[in-house]
Length: 416
Image (tube, rainbow, N blue to C red; front, side, top):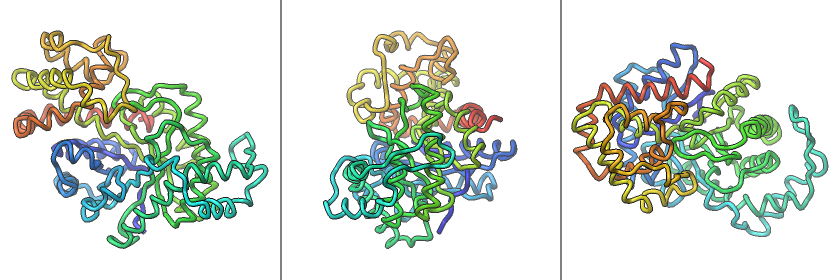
């Protein structure tokens, strides 16, 4: 089986021009003593919005590692795929995120639920997980409820996995299971039995992306009770440890944090806990590279600044269209969203400072940032004009991309 390394970092790139700038951040981390592997990820939705293909992500990734002399592993993630969307990724990806969120809550066949309950009856009563102070009480009704809520979704994941095995061979890809894009977080007890079901379906998941408490909005900091997140994350780590021992799941199974971009207030917690228990982590930071491109253009001034403003102005007038697909992961306060007229009066410094995620900067505006985050379709419609502007100002744009990933993400998480 292809085995993902202990620390992996998802580096999505909407427009496919920042691969080397992203990898440069991973190289800086290695020089600082943190061994990360890059995972380029791009979802089917992003490909459709921009008009790209999975093959282009593979080319970008391979060319980046070749140009920068990277000799460690690297991966290309078919991000958030299901049976309807997986086919175009199969030849070009070696990391597959099986997204089961849409199937959670749908009821599996009665006999499948009965089998799930029977397989887990040995855990009825008190369930003690080493490292967790509280003891969980497992009743038969709990098993039925978990089976009814999650088993259908896990069966769907099994169908995707079996298709991938048939097409690629089991040894040629890494499997992630994603269930983060739902309204309700999974409890540690639910996580334990979800992992039991994954093992029963012979899905060798190496990373799992649960829904955590709090808001994981796109491109902005975590919103929620940080201490509650800390407890939840720690318990999930310990649940995974027990599940590996109980169910024979891959020994390197680790947590994956989706919508991980810019979750600055919880990065130090994650870093402390994975070090405490000597566990791995996978973090996806897909969308913020695109924001750093816009920051770079604004810093370049002239026509590039005007293009950045034009992107915002168009996004402002198309909010319903652009925000709709991301409604569950953005919170924009209209009262604090600058008007196009106001933004048109800004200079390079004001624009870039308003967009760049430095929370205590007086100019920073998280509403402005979130709208541009979901507005990448506007840039895609500019076509060659946008791409050529990025190439013209490659140096300043790349510097923003590298700085963002290394200084604001990696250094925080790994306490560098």
